[in-house]
Amino acid sequence: SGSGMLLTVILRDVTEVRAAEASRRESESRLAGIVLSAMDAIVTIDEAHRVVLFNPAAERMFGRASDDVVGRALDVLLPERFHSAHRDHVNRFAQSGQTSRKMGQLGRVWGVRANGDEFPIEASISQAVAGGQRFYTVILRDISERKQLEEQLLQSQKTEGIGRLA
Image (cartoon, rainbow, N blue to C red):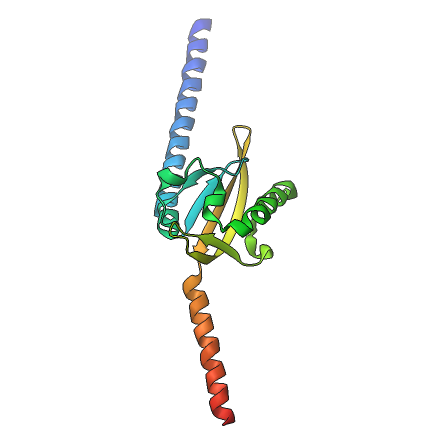
């Protein structure tokens, strides 16, 4: 009767492990679906600032295929004059102990498309440790259209102001 008890315990342990694995797979699948369908660009980099994830919205935003970016330094997505400042910002964020932060404190953030065009970005960053390695995920939104509209509004307000003075 003692060995029957042992068999029951082993079966229960295996069942729990399988259920946990199924739950993890389901969770990963759900997360992958979110990343793939997100309207904002999602880019994950490792501690060496190499891109490990580049979602379809990022491909559209930067005009680059994921296969061309994954494994390369994040610098390929930034105007050259911002390379060291951005690296410092990520390193300071790593030491801060915060899990996430809007990148507004950095001032305006800029990206560079495959064709060389620079564009303003709104960004947030989060960090997580997986398998003993730290990863940073940045969610980016191209705000060039919003900036254009703001500038047009500002120009029209200035023009109206001149008209009223005359």
